[in-house]
Image (cartoon, rainbow, N blue to C red):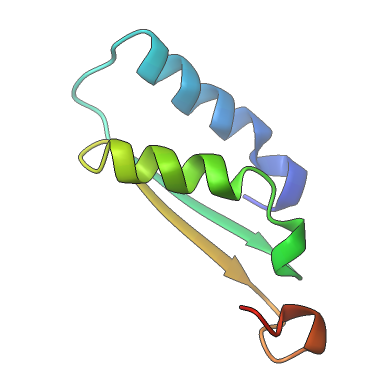
Length: 72
C-alpha cells in the first residue's frame, strides 16, 4: 500500500485485533517517496512489535538518497 491507500488495510488489522481474531497473518508493506509521508507507520510498527505472530510490517521509501530522507 502507499501513503493514504493503506487506510483500508489498517482498518482490517485493527478490526481483526479488536475482535480477537486468530489464525491469520498480515504482511503490510507501506511505501512512500519520503519517510515523513509514511502514514500509520508508528502505529503499525507498534502493533507488529506487540503481535509478532500476526503482523509483519515493512515500511519503505522510494527515494532513500534524497536529503528529505536523510534520517532514513
